[in-house]
Every structure is written in structure tokens, then in C-alpha cells.
Image (tube, rainbow over all chains, first blue to last red; front, side):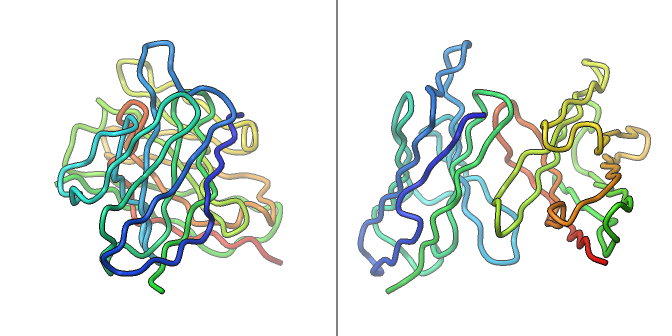
Length: 112
Length: 119
């Protein structure tokens, strides 16, 4: 299975400041069809995950433009340009380029 | 509006069985692959398996960790997806989610249903 790692696992942030989460995979996520199926999800307590980003850098409708995704191959990053209070929760990366699909362990973001 | 709602969770003894359901609305169920994902504090999010769509004969696919114990099925006439879980273990205790497979991603998830495995 492809192992997904995230760092940091805990990220205290200051409101209005930028934040960055890294996600690495144990093998390249470039699919044979040429796409890279790397997703980012945000989960608040008691809720199901909400997709933010798909195929590395495509932001979902309704997701604020302060969120951006980047990366290639085995290394990916989710950036929040200016953290707002509603951004707290756990962020997960997930790969769907290889079977079975696998998720990162999550990065817990809270306010300092 | 797309909606997915899981049900059927509860308390079950080790070795027991449980069937989870996922009721869908707001889209043509037979067109989509549908997946089951579970979440535990210990292991995080874990993909369990999926049911392909009608065009692909609803063929299921499973994660090695549950293959042989879990069975995924669906009833398009009832707009429902199912997860039959047999020989449940302590480590199967989790929140179980159904999600619509969008081809490498999940935009729609249900709220989840909690399964507790304990004697």
C-alpha cells in the first residue's frame, strides 16, 4: 500500500498568519493516465470530511481562495494564506492513484 | 441536492454481524461508483471497498483488511448501498462513511454511523 505521511501532525496557528501542511507519499502519485490523484480534506469534530482540493491543486467550489494546493510526484503541500477561526480542525491528504486508496494521518490545526 | 445518509450502526459483540445502509438521493445512483470508508482514532481514515456502477456490473472491490468478512452490495431500486460486516473484531469499531466515488476523489460523504464492537 502507498503510505501517506503528513507534517506537522499538530499545527498551532495565529489568526491572520499563513500555515502550511506537507504530505508525502511512499511512491509517485502520477497515475498511468497522467493525472495525479492527490486530495485534501478538512474535518471538523463530529463532521464528515469535506473536500478542499482535488488532483493536487484544484480548489472546490465554495472553498475560500486562501486555500491552495501544490506539489508533484511524492511531495505535496496545502497552504492557507491567512488562517481564520473557521479553519481549525484536522486536514487529511488522500491518494487515489494506487489501490487501495490511502489517507494521511491528519494534521490538527488549532489557534494559538 | 446530493445526500448520503448511513444507518445501521450500533453495539455488536465480537464475532457478530451488522449490516450498514447508505440511503442516497439527489443523483442517479446507478451511474456512480460508491465507496465505504471508516475512521478510528487509532488508524485514521481507511478505505474499505467500493461498488462499481451499473455499467460495470456493480462489481465490488475490497481492501485486504476486510476482504472475506465484509460484503458490499447495492439496490438501485431503493437507492441504497449496503455493507454487510461479519465476524466483527474489536478493531472494526469505527465511524463508517459512505462516499460517492468521483473517479479518484470524494466530494460527497454521509454523516457516518458509529459501530461499537464490545462484549
